[in-house]
Each structure stands twice: as C-alpha cells, then as structure tokens.
Image (cartoon, rainbow, N blue to C red; front, side, top):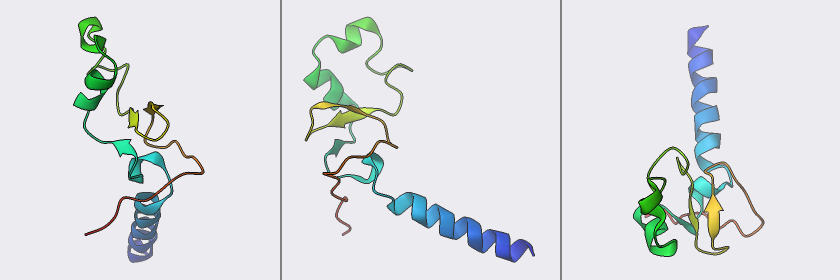
Length: 81
C-alpha cells in the first residue's frame, strides 16, 4: 500500500515541477540581485532581500514582480539542456 502512495506522490511532484507557472518560465529572472538593478534603492529599505520579497522575482516580459505559483498566457518554459 505504501508503494502506491509513493508513486502517486512522485507523479504529483512531476506535475508540479512541469506546471505552466512563473517558477518554470523563461521570463522569470531567477537571480534576486536583478531586483536591485531594476528597482534602485530597494535594498536601502532592507526589503530587497527580506521576507517582503520572499520567492518573488522579476518577470522580464511584464516588468513586474511575480510569485512562483503565478501564471499568465505568455508562459514559455525554461528550455531543458
């Protein structure tokens, strides 16, 4: 019985990793330092790398902050090498 749960968990993890969301999009700037470059002075307020930004990153297509689970119609997956 536990084997079936493991397989279901693996399938769900694979779906979550491949879902069309900002965390998997080529337009999401993964580097947190790109926020400081795009929003000058952000680190002065101690929020550039703190909890207020958390896992949000810059969407280079829309020029706005996005959370990993956000989605949009222009989603383009990160190419696999």
